[in-house]
Amino acid sequence: MTGKHRENYNRNYLEYVKSREPRTKNFKNCLAAFGVGGLICCIGQFIRYMFEFAGLTGDVLAGSVSVVLIFIGCLLTGLGVYDRIGRYAGAGSIVPITGFANSVASPAIEFKTEGWIYGMAAKMFTVAGAIIVFGVFSGVAVGLIYYFV
Image (cartoon, rainbow, N blue to C red):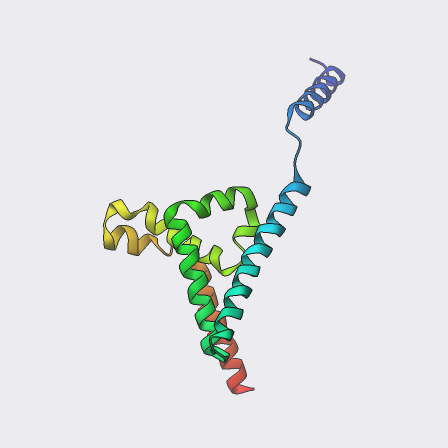
């Protein structure tokens, strides 16, 4: 095959591949991610208002809302609901605190059959472990800089 024929063959093949590949649904995906992420945040804000109405303030309020959202994320992961939300919403389901709870609970549930220690406890931080280590390291570094400056 000569160079000119090969070039035509490659161009025809690339045109064929482009005609067969599915169209992306970027707008729909972005809208779903924005809507679900916003809904999760609105639920968190509603929980915050309820706790404020109950009389909680400051750090106790912030901690209580975080604990409830983490519990809801883990519960929905355990029931298999959060996976369906993630398939629909994509990144919109992983940005809020419930997504972090899902990333910790999912491996723990998946490897539960390997036992409590080597399965659930060891695999629990496979996805979120790097985030936790980086967060702790960054917090220590910023704290030391703040202390010495």
